[in-house]
Length: 128
Image (tube, rainbow, N blue to C red):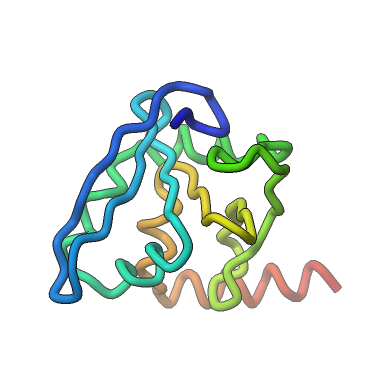
């Protein structure tokens, strides 16, 4: 599978959990991450997933500007989504196959801080 943003090959990384292994795909170049349906949520609260998102968040922010991307599984155009809890996190989703996070976004998704709560509050006010 190739990265939907920079088109470099993706490599598989399997993390073991008490419920079994979860395999995620990480881009070999930009370090963006593909999660099949349910994988991101399954790993969100697991301590061993801290190291899976090892990309540079600055590169992730640059790639976050790329929006017209196709699902690496089926080729359909993916939809831009915002995390319902942390609305500043924007990722791409294929309703049939999964989610794509740019480098650094999964780590942000995993940890909600007081700064995130404040930033999202300000973001909500500005959108009005």
